[in-house]
Length: 399
Image 1 (cartoon, rainbow, N blue to C red):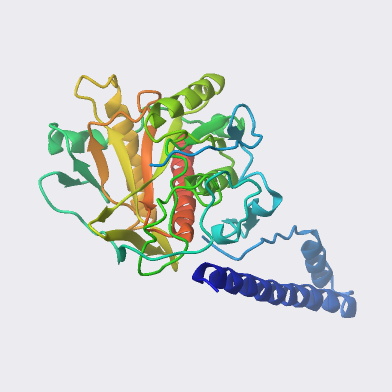
Image 2 (tube, rainbow, N blue to C red):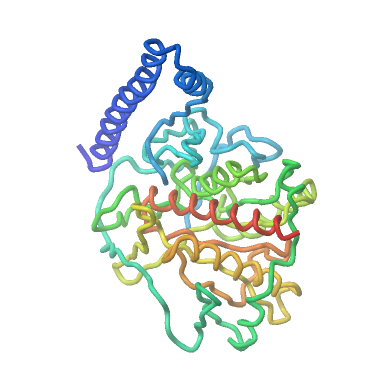
């Protein structure tokens, strides 16, 4: 039996055990106060307690959890040309997120089975190859790095001075969000993936599989799954989301940004309520026969470290408002790092375009690397969604 199947059987056994244990707990939790109410029904406070218990809605989840090739692709039926509007975590019932005590609980990506994995499915057995090194990036030093106020860093790869950018980093985002925007149900956040097939390791191990290029059309095992996790958290806070799930690195890797631009332009036209556009990727941190797994522990679970990329324009990239995206990048970086110390790597501020001319809240976010595991990046996606929700709510309160 290969390691992947062993892990899946272990998780299935663990989940079944957890469900049985939770069922017993739920029975005892319900039986004790109700029995008390029968025995002492003349006591109004006990009867009222039983009435309150009986009126509560109970939630459960499928799992307990808090947290460049050319190939063809057979597209599934989607809404409005390949994007999904406020449909939660995917399109299959078993992957819909549940709310448990105010938190979104997602099924492990290893336990998700796609109804249409496409023509490049995720591997079911694994070989060996390059050494995989687990590491946690801390504070960076050097002339290109500077600290943001309170927390977070920027890696400035441009000719602009650090002192100038530090002053700019103190500016609020250049878009407004009101409580009415949130309550309207109209989408505020657009999530998409230029390199849609980017994928990850199945679980923690010592080596990569050099026969796998870490790309798959199975959206339960590629970067779309991370976008789903972000979306689930935003929607749990009542924030509308459009998630473009279209594959853009098909039929080839080259031209991906042009194709993703073609996907999101009509979305922005259809939904002028969108303030924030996030292109969710993963990094590829590696060297000669070595790859890295940048991770940190958040609330007892391993999360892939993330990096925001904000593009600068030297006058040749057609992004006259690039500094407005930088304002948002710094605000989000401080929110993320303040909420979850160690989650972020420094913002990369460099001469990049990445379709960031389309809104004043357009950023690219690298969630881990190909050496990170599926569960690590899913947890990071949830953390991004939580912090972004908090930020949006704060911006609405300030209006």
